[in-house]
Length: 266
Image 1 (cartoon, rainbow, N blue to C red):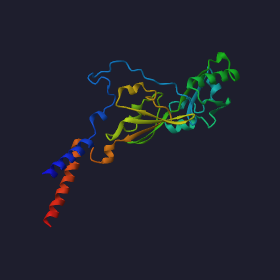
Image 2: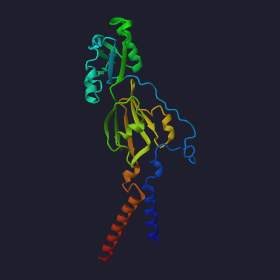
Image 3: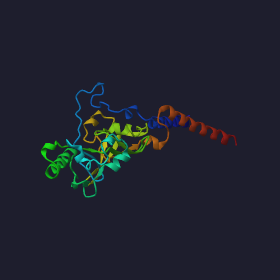
């Protein structure tokens, strides 16, 4: 009788510890005021202007009153400005080399490392006015990143490198485009590995907390790596829910019972 009680206690402990709590699977919880189902204050999203790094690809377009004078600056031509593939962006864009320079026709090498796209636009415009055109040409320069490329890995449904043609992408959009986090993924400690001029740094995000929207790492940057760790329940392998855990435990109990009956009859 005592052994049966001990077995029940052990199995109950396994069942409780192996189930993934519902609160660990829900995004953006209001943890400071659990009784209120609305956010009690406006959350301000934090995003600093992105500064260009080595290996970034820039899409540079120059327009003036007489477009024939700037065809050399716009190599793909106006007819192909709507090209959306990552391959075309790679071949038609301007890649930042190891020295932080891009090579622009006629203008030559220009250092863009650490600049924002707005600063690069002004820099190109000034150089054109100094060397090629007059104020009356009405120069209009646009500089954009040729897609926001990042890598998602770990406990995620579709790991790999993703390129999105948007200027702003938050962590939830990035994960959604990588196939979402399965129930066995740790949403409380998602790691964002970000490149800096001094090297790489690891930042941690709790996606179950609504205050993640105030994090300076809520918006991803080009070349970010998103890593989702597995929950310990996956390592145990007893099941993700109470039903699956019960099924696993029932199978084990059945196996043990059958083995005991066989040995006792011998």
